[in-house]
Image 1 (cartoon, helix red, strand yellow):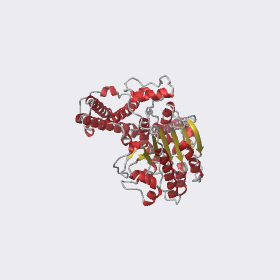
Image 2 (tube, helix red, strand yellow):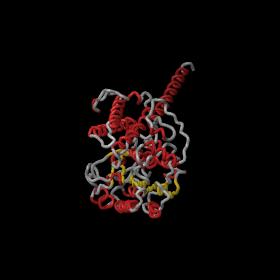
Image 3 (cartoon, helix red, strand yellow):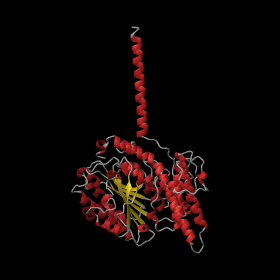
Image 4 (spheres, helix red, strand yellow):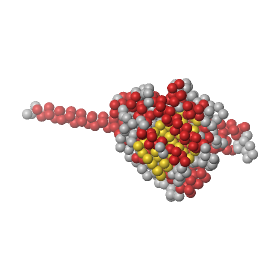
Length: 492
């Protein structure tokens, strides 16, 4: 018995150590797989139009104003005219951007071009601009919709929530539009209704999980199209078509059903564009945005981080993108989250607090240089608030009036110092641009300062976005490459 006691004690010790090791390993796995990022609580408001300070960012909200007063307040504080009055957001689930925009600077295949003649005519005529908008994994519908309207990147936990969608409570575009009195209508994938159960003035949802249906699921959206386009009681119309994604799940990219489905979507785009451009009232300026939540693999699956799955579309059709010259099949690349600040600034609402996206300059061609600078400044202020939350040691006030003039490729190694120098250059150039304005005409010197400021803001925003996004994006990519999630995600 005496000899057995040390053995039992040793066995118990090893057992406890093994259990502790497993607990530590599981904790590390959960911490990496479900990362928790510092976020800003509440919704953006009038403070969005003021420069951020280094004081702790609170979640308290300002006194509520009636929608019409809030809209007027935002218009006054933003110093930028609203570019559009109405929004049509058309989501074509699972549409790879290369079906519309080609790949590597080359146009789409002949079959794809012929399947969407109207959309291709808009691109060729410089009346639309399209982007390969990279979606972050997991490339499933619910987290991608949340990213598009909030500008934030979710995590792997969203895959599980995709099957049981809960109301989305974070700051987002739809809530911001609703706050200024916009009436929203939604037709299509019921995921939108689950995310925003109280926002829509009118709605008709369809289930996304019966993937054998490629016809009725889209007919249930299009049957309302003519009446909704003729209606005057909405300001934002959300259309979510599921049929193309279902075609992919059934037969992959090369399915015989793919070209007919693309033609159907092209006809919807034609009908919407014809309706909104036939309006004679110039105050009803409508922006048509055609997006996809994700792409698909050759066999029609999605959920992972491959190029084919993350290659989503962002196509903008409106007066502010018209140009005398364009190259529609250049590989214009952006991130899906860039949709958020772009739409917020085009419609005169605050950028959601946790956005990491950067506005798309080509959408602001109708603005003056000073107004373009102001949009970049507002985007920078919003990003700064988020940086100061996620990097407590970083303070934007310490970046003002720095004298060193570094090129981007010569900046100090410290991330904080790089951000500080880029921000200081942007602010200094902006101030110089304002000081050199002339009451009657803009001097060559003022124009040069404006161009320098535009470039400096763009440099800062690109680097800040990379800083905020890289850790989460790389973490998600690594996990999706390491774990074989395809079977689990096959039918989402």
